[in-house]
Image 1 (spheres, one colour):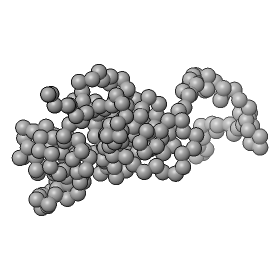
Image 2: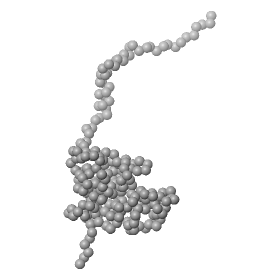
Image 3: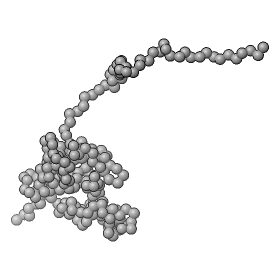
Image 4: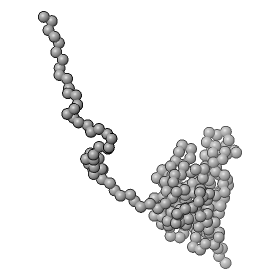
Length: 227
């Protein structure tokens, strides 16, 4: 009897529970002691850059932060996981995904699409807001869900995510809690705008400038003769 294939790899759950961005207990005296890496082959806790010397030939992920929540680049994780149906975001023009669910800030008003698990507002064509929510959906028995990359996967779904701005220490999300579908703004020709501004009358209450009333330029001064 063949063993039934699990819909996600064994390292996924430990990675989602890892204590990222905490101080490494082994390399606390190192300059780079913050744990922001994960080894897929060892499935231990998060690793700091000094720990990587013992994992040279192992598969690794680098984890980043956005508003104190862990994120990972799509180009890194899509080699090992089918991340379709997950809402992508953009940090420095690179698509990223959140590792775990985040609390909804404020009430949901006017949003048409939401995460199937935590009900957080997301964009159209997505079902989950994070890797953790998709994993929970798989464990809840939602049909046709898998993290295995053997199924057809289209990267077009991950293009053009919501913008995330990165600061020096972490990336901060802008506009995620007020997500709305907006129609594209109409195009305005710069030439027509300039022409309209030049031909428009002066605002009320402001005097009209008259060139005829301007002071004439003085002529060349001439020194009086000595005799």
